[in-house]
Length: 182
Image 1 (spheres, rainbow, N blue to C red):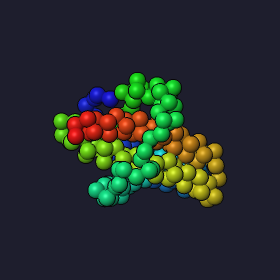
Image 2 (image 1 turned 180 degrees about the horizontal axis):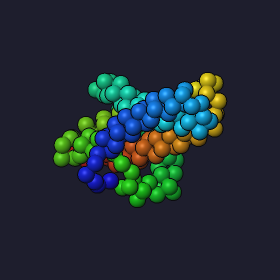
Image 3 (image 1 turned 90 degrees about the horizontal axis):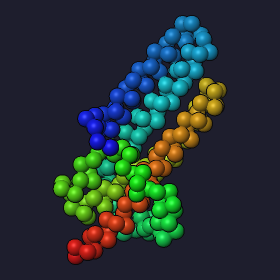
Image 4 (image 1 turned 90 degrees about the vertical axis):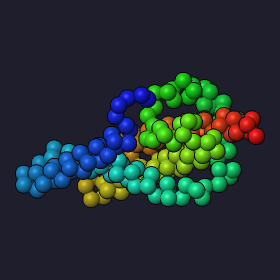
């Protein structure tokens, strides 16, 4: 995805705006006590959660980047997966998906081995994000409105799943390129 605004900046802006709206809507709701204000507060709080927790997960997983065993079974892509990715037309679709930090996957700035490490790191981030997407459902205990939490959790996990698929789609080609150069 080529543009002037990085996806990273967009995530920070959405985090700030949604957190700010959460405070505003909860404050207004405490003064006026309106169902729509509570719904807006809970919705913006859920958006804030989804974006802020992703930034936090990126930070935490990146701390362990050098310790990832890229040769572990977990990172191996099966032939069945490859055929599914082919049916999903991942090769064509991935061009339209944003990248949080494109420099990590730039062949001019990184060795193929480093790109594989970055690829595995990105997969871990998005996999953890998928699980973290469902934590907000527990907030419905306090706020009700379980539908908001379920909808945003499912959408957020599906959104992250596409990134896991792309990382897993790309990895075999990267590994093959490394073996060709050796």
